[in-house]
Structures are given as structure tokens and as C-alpha cells.
Image (cartoon, rainbow, N blue to C red; front, top):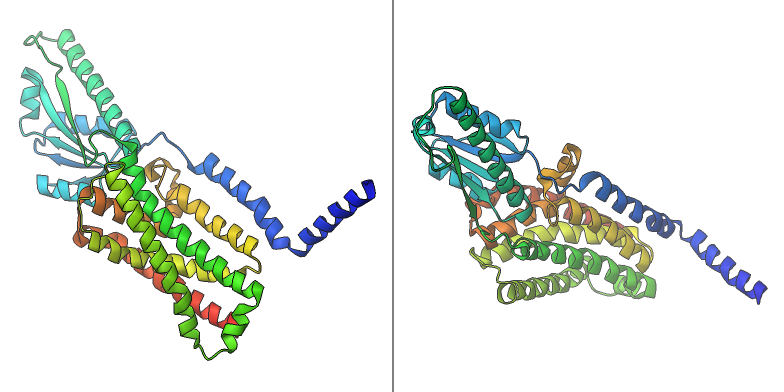
Length: 375
């Protein structure tokens, strides 16, 4: 019995030695997962992009804004001159927080409650929760500072309200429901998983069975073979997308505020790139397990670094740069912009251009490599 068991163990090690790529991938994927979780994932969101509409221009207003930046939770990146401009920045996702300081801020600060409007993009509940709690703490601290100065100096009018009153308004997801944020993002993950894994596995399986060589020597042209593989995967992906939207709307009460036609059209551009990755994996993998592992290796960083589950604003700077080369990052902004915010192409084009560039380059290179592998 011992010799038979040792023989079986030896046979398995021989198989592993003949497939070093599969062993390397099996060892590398857990390390990559640990690295991403330990280094990049951070739920303590700081330096939230903030837009300011300062109608006061007073010294007190500048002191207030310095307090925002010194808290390290807000990073003032935009100075606007109208409510419409501030709204546009928040709708486009460039600013996650908007601060509106009234014209009479300095006068009201010394006489009564000075109201500051804080607009928070609540489409991401984690970022919104951090922004709301930080703004509330900052308002309480500023009020305490004003009251302390009043006690040390000349007594002023008795107050029934705190001197600084932050009026926080949460847009798009006022109840901070996590499902409203995560479920639309899962559409991008489903499309990526389907187009990469299914494309890679179907081609590699045909190569393993020998049917791919039979198709190559048949009268079918190469481009017909390619389209015959791509179109069914696209239809399945669109079917998954439709089912996901129905479940999101009817089960999770996710509001669909924008154009579904625009969403379906832009999803095709996104899938150009993911299909290109799937085609490339099919040329690099020799077996179905290899194709599955390589697909998972491309899928893993996209899930955790794109902003699907964890906010990009909370990641280290190097991880944020890495997130901006992942196509899912831009697609998530598109799908959430259309579904949750109801914005159109005039807001979404900055995220569309990287998807177009990535899809054109990756799809073209992958098709050329696929044709070369057929030769």
C-alpha cells in the first residue's frame, strides 16, 4: 500500500513539473491577494476631493477652509463661482464633497448660527460616511473654538444654536444603502468575468480537444472564426447585464435614473478591452486550468483596486495610480453615473476616452496574437 501511495504522489509531482506555469500561478495568486489587501485596502478614507463655493471671501471663511484641509479628510481641489458649477463637478464625480459658504458668513458667525452647506456624493456610502462624520466633528470643534474665544473676550449674544452649523446634504443615496452602491458596480465585474473567462476557456478547450485545428483547415475564414467566438460571448454578457439590472431594480430598489441605451452602448466599448484580455489569455494558456488561473489573476486586482468594493481615495498614492490603468475603474464611474446620477455623455466622456484607448490597443494586439497562434 505504501509503495502504491508513493507512486501516486510521484506521478502527481511529475504532472506538476510538466506544468510549471500552473504551479507558478497557484503560488502567485494568494500572494497577490495578500499584497493587495495588506497594502492597498484602507477603509479610513482621507483627502476626499472637495469643491468650494466661497461667497464670503472673508478672513473667517479662509480660516474655516484651512480647518477643512488641516483635518486631512478633505482636499480642496476646485474653487467655483456658482452653484451650477459645483453641481456639475459633483455630478461628474470629480468632487465628492461640495462646500458652500454664504455671503454673510462672518457677520452671522459673531451674531447667530452661521450655516455652511456641505454637499456629499453619497453614491459611495463609505466615502460619504467618512465625509459626513468628519464634517460633523469639524463643525463641533469650530463651534467650540468660537465659544471659547467669546468667553475669553467680551461676552456676546446668548446663543441657542452652535456658532457654526454644518448642513449636510447627501446626494444620490441619502440613506447610505450599500446595495445601491455595490450592485451597479457588480455589473462591470460580471461583464469582465464573462468576457475574459468564457472567451479564454472556450478557445483553450477547443485547442485541447483538437477541434480548433479542424476549424482552421475548414473553409471558415479567420475573421469568421473570431466573430463566431466573440458574438455569443457578447450576447451572454448582455443577457447577464439585463438580468442584473432587473434584479437591482426590483429586488434591491436601485434607482435607474439615466439612459439604458447609453449604458448598453458604452458597455460594448468596455467589453472590447475585456474581450481583448480574454483572447490574449487564450493564446498564452495551454490548458483550461491555466486559462482559469490567468483569468483570475487579471480579475483579482480589478475587483479590489477599481473602487468596486473599497474607495480609491483611501488607497496609497501608488495604488491610486495603479487603479487608473484598470479599465473597470472607468466603467464603474460610467455605470454608477448613469444609474445613480442620471448623467449623460457630456459628463461621462472623460471616463470613456481611456476605455476607448484601452479597448482599441488591447483588442487589436490580442487579435493579431491570436491570428499568429493559429498560423
